[in-house]
Image 1 (cartoon, helix red, strand yellow):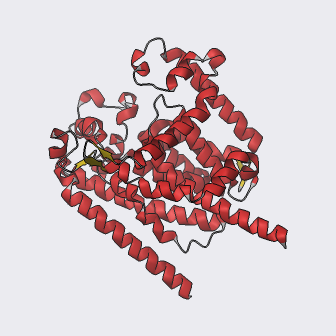
Image 2 (image 1 turned 90 degrees about the vertical axis):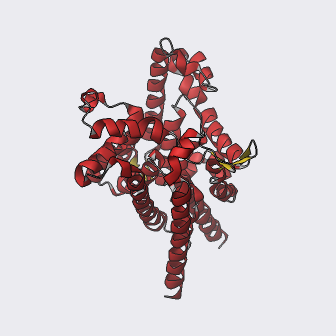
Image 3 (image 1 turned 45 degrees about the horizontal axis):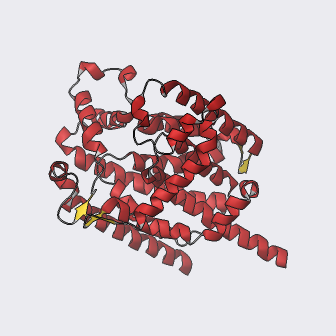
Length: 372
């Protein structure tokens, strides 16, 4: 009983810390978003303080929808890069908030999503992996949550939906999966396919051959798309980096397949690089520095990382195999993106950490049992 009270007190304390810093961030930075727009998202001390996509894409699109602009009427006019605006348009249809309040509305929505994502994070840890989760309150001490709680954020939705996809796929709750897939389409369309994860799961077990077959089919399909767009969208080549090789080596549509592991590593390299280089031109890069704690936390699970890298099939057959399959599926989806950026990893980092902790714990139990 004492442990339950202690863990609950820790959770309450950590959540209070999160709320305090989140409100402070909102009150001092987010409400002044127009100033930061006009000053390249910087002030005298900080830079990259907010997600600029909100003002470049989401706000204008939402304004068009609310003002009933005929050029954006109907689902056929949905642009993938702007489609999250339709979720806030749905919220507007229900609550009829003033457009000038979109900052506080998005802040409230994101904070609700933080709590929902925490709820499923704990359920996955307890029900799927079998952890006691006495340390669960530390979930709220991830500063990235503060950063992605400001403005309209795809990452906050994806973080929550990823947890829900994982839980309901293992539980085989198809109605919930269908609803989550629909909403995910309006956030980042390719991730809606995660609703089909029960195809590769049998309860908490992974159908490894089916999983590998679907991965191969997906990457070949991406290779076909690369082959099609490379000839008439030269903008893809600009700053494409490693993707250029996927285009150039795309014989028999194998480019994305060959480059997939390198692009996944490149995203993690970008995460590490940004986390440990938090200052640019004498200013603190806020979106870089917020990733430092969870990046360090991942490093503490180095034994589990090595185990997954060198024994992937055994890891997929283990207690955490179903959740590991979700992590792999997510990473393969972002490897199909023409660009490399650590931001794409943010929604999956808490689940990666949970899986690594689970592997470390279950492996320790297995080793202890063998020794006995």
